[in-house]
Amino acid sequence: MKHIAPDLFGYSNPPYCGEPPAQRHSQTSVAAAEKIKTAIGPLHKEILRFLGELPNMGATDEEMQFGIGMSANTQRPRRRELQLDGRIVDSGKTRRTKSGREAVVWRIP
Image (cartoon, rainbow, N blue to C red):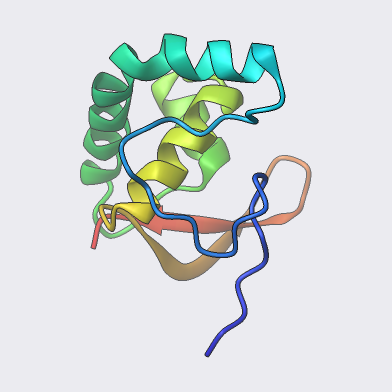
């Protein structure tokens, strides 16, 4: 079994239960999670629409952020939720970011 490194919240394989993640010890994190609740559905749809337009190519987080016009701090958590929900997957490919680092290419299964 492949070892999965803990995520930002310390989970090795966190379930996505429809609630935005938050650092429960941080009032600002809890407030941000509460505020984003009503926007999650449309944000998920925007990411899925974007990836749906690139079925053979997929996109890195950075490419999604640029292509959709979504901030990194909004896009990455929404992408992770979609991943946990099985609606997008790691393509097994990587591409270089602007900084020259390799990044996962995400796609719709």
